Length: 85
Image 1 (cartoon, rainbow, N blue to C red):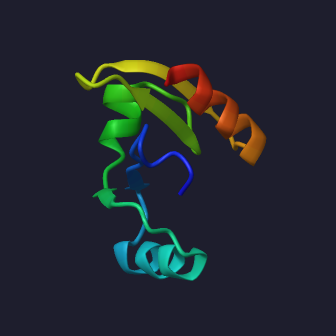
Image 2 (cartoon, rainbow, N blue to C red):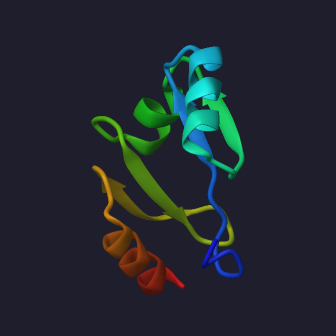
Image 3 (cartoon, rainbow, N blue to C red):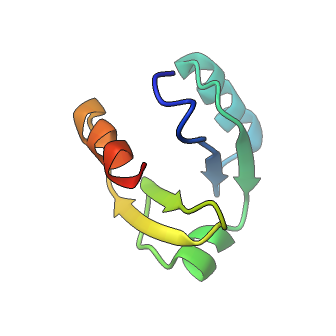
């Protein structure tokens, strides 16, 4: 991963069957850590975003500094990483 010295990724599986989600992550080769939010509380109660996918950037203290709802291209994700690092 190109930016591993600057950032860390964490996937949140929201309202999915955990076994199906794990199979999908294995299929696509996701190597970053994953957690499960079966009830979708993170999405609705804490992040207050309308849907998925959503990318959230946290500062070193864990405060949300940026939210992006929708998919990313590789170029737009690289741009976001440059912006926040």
